Image (cartoon, rainbow, N blue to C red):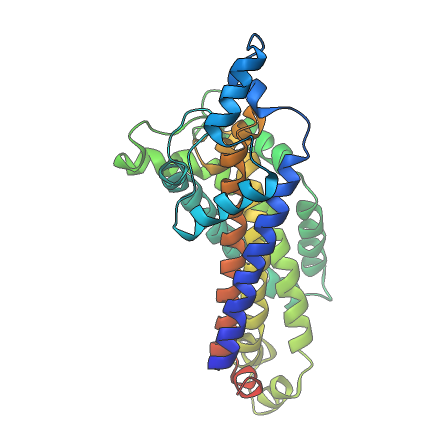
Length: 320
């Protein structure tokens, strides 16, 4: 178990290193000159050269990457090229919006996907199962922006048919006004959660359908339990592994959805900040933000893998 843990941690570190390389050098091949953005269209060549010297942009790409990596090892994400503000502080501030948004969307998706996935599998040979399965496939294909606009039209305060929820902005005091902050996240979280819930539903349905014909479920049914009780008591522990795995797969979808949805609902989160920084060519800030989000996905993948070891004793035996 310890050897497996060390191996997974080393893979996590290697994944971060490779990701940092890809992010850094991919951003450098994008068109446009960041010094021109900083200096403005009227900047003279001498002024542009001064900007390059001030921000170390005159160094080789390898040297710039080494400086950035050295800062990361010291837990220093650097400073914005545009505002000179510490990137780490701003990420922490914006993450106070993005993290609750993703967690709320995850709760919504699991609340939709798990029970309906079980019902769809148990009723797979009836009309109800077919309707749920078809609806899930349709919802999983809906773009997040389109779903968000539809929810605004339906429930957006002031513009929707049933205007009960705010569709723009976040309280200035943030979580100092918890009620307003929570309601501000409801529509964005529903936008992400409904789509991701359809994905969870499909995974759970497949896992339950695989569990139904298993010997342990049929044996339990033969001892007097109904098919549903036998599945719930003996099949769901095995289905839980599939649910844990799909949570890991959902992480990237939640973060990607947050990037799009925060811009649509005017939320001051990491996603909206990232979109703005890409437009401003703030390379140092963009690379730190993307690495932070990617590292979060990799970390959750690591935790999910370790949770498999705790939930499934068979995997523990394989790694000992």
